[in-house]
Image 1: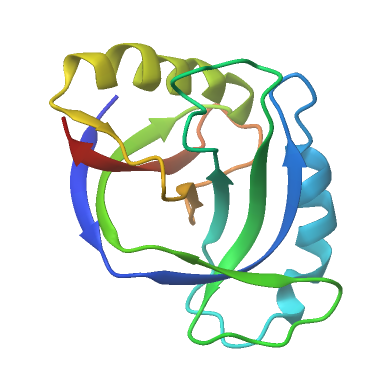
Image 2 (image 1 turned 180 degrees about the horizontal axis):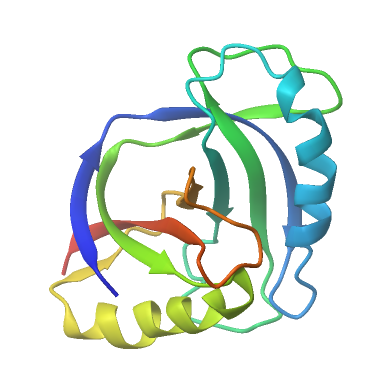
Length: 160
């Protein structure tokens, strides 16, 4: 999988959130709730969708598929907005990220994530910055459940 390094400024996201774990993965429910109302959000920066995850600081040190994390479905906005239907705004902190270009069906994305966390990180000179959000950008090349789909996987990093 191709990757690059990026340094970004903070990004404000208007979103829905839901706590889940890998054994009870509710991302489809989250997106089904978000998508019908996304056009009601004002001050959008672009048409990209953001799939965001916040793990506990020890999530990767003491991994368990039953360990909960927060998942967010949202869009980037220029300023905090008062949005309907229990939307909230979160800030993706600025900083250094490794960005992987994933091509394939979302059904097979878990293989890509497994490769990143079990192969790429241990062999790299970086570790995961556990205090920041991980996110995927679902842009114009994203095609739900298609093998031709493309998305970017952004993981916050620190030097080991």
